[in-house]
Amino acid sequence: MSTLSERRELSPVGGSRLAAWPLIVLLSAHGLSLVGNAVTVIVVPLYVLQLTGSVAATGVAGAFATVPMIIGGALGGVLVDRFGFRRAAVVADVASGVTVLAIPLLALTIGMSFSVLLLLVFLSGLLDTPGRTAKEALVPDLAAKGDVQLTRATAASSAISRSAMLIGASLASVLLVSIGALNSLFADAVTFAVSAVLIGVVLPRSATSETTAPEGMPPASVWAEFVEGVRYAARTPIIRSVVILVVVTNLIDAAGFLVLFPVFTRTVTQDGSLFGLVMGCFAGGAVVGAVTFAKVGHRLPRRALLIGGFLIAGPVPYLAMFAMVSPATLLMAMAVAGLAAGAINPLLTSTLYKLVPRELRARVLGVLTTGVTAGMPLGSLLAGSAVELWGLAPVLLSAAAVYGVFALSPLFGKSWLALKRA
Image (tube, rainbow, N blue to C red; front, top):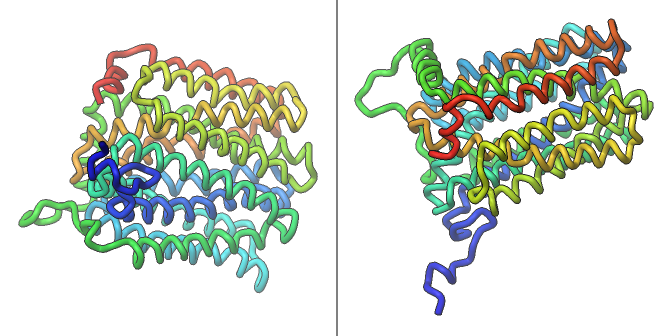
């Protein structure tokens, strides 16, 4: 005979549907804003290529999109901890939506130079990063209130993020063909607006706390709080190891998704619409990988899973492009790479959630964002310059080789044992 708790209507992420409702609202809002971001990630490099005709300029635009992630991650995490996760998420969504909307409005009215485009891309990334940190910091609280296992909540968050990339990539392909690159950015602004409404209006206020600072304690300076987060990350061996690994792989991924993939797909399709399909297949595979991790991930050896995920997710796409495979084969390779990548984020995130105290959560996540994105602008700049100097094929092969070497780093060092302990 089933108990009352067993007869409860279950939500897709575990726990009762009613209790898990705030978590579902949060993940829905996060997913919507990421759909718009996926459109922008695909559209902006293609628009820059269309506007300038320069691969190097595309690399510069990629750097301007990633540098603010470093700044926003560093100081944004402190501000999120200080002003509250919910409030910071809403303000960041509204500000990011306004900035993204300004790109097509200016271009279609008074015109827009390349320097103004770079400024708007920079501001959009600067404002978006703290908002993403705030939403991620809310996940453990809402999972606990909804009686949802943290591993399942992080896997659901990762699956929704990957699904957003899949939907956004597919939407971008359709928009590029139907209304062009510039008009596609209106979709991004709409998703930010809806996300702000969901978190600011629909998400129950009783489900979130607006402050993480201890009561009766005067707030420290922004710099002091940032340093506190840095110190915590620096003295935690597993965090140090994660940062080193992900900083290198993110550098290569930035080179790939901001420069190498757009350039490659422009050689196959004139409008670059294949880029959207490539991103969509990767995201689709990642959704399946994240869902599979939620089901069976706790039974698998985490270090082996991490190494295998990086080895397949990283080198495979670059080797496929180096070999000049057919578009259909490339899409299959991207789906397999996405499947392997799907477990990486929830595996690492669930570990970090269990290690970091709540009062430090946003600033440590911000420090991590700063650390793991530090190499992304360099990756974009180097890729743009390297392709113009040596051609696409040598750069693709080099990217695959370096990725493969660093994917093996979890084999060495005792710090990675924390994956199992967490």
